[in-house]
Length: 72
Image (cartoon, rainbow, N blue to C red; front, top):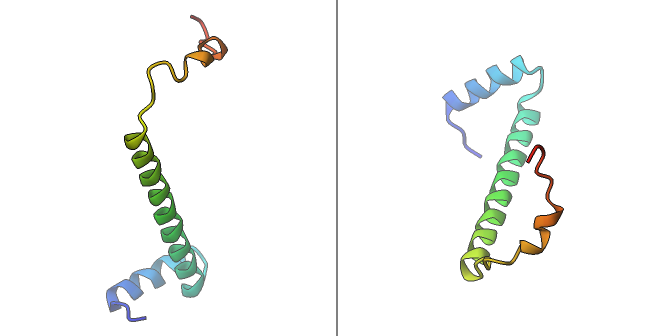
């Protein structure tokens, strides 16, 4: 893996502030990026599902009596 010198310096600086190693910081950053990608893909999948099968006007009406409205 080739990294820009400025990026490595920034990672080293932040790793030192966080009292962790460059490797540990990089592992966490990569894992966070993979988690973000997975969440974005799931959101896209949900969005496409609702676009293909929109919510019907009365789809959730059976739950209206179950909602907590607070001071209403």
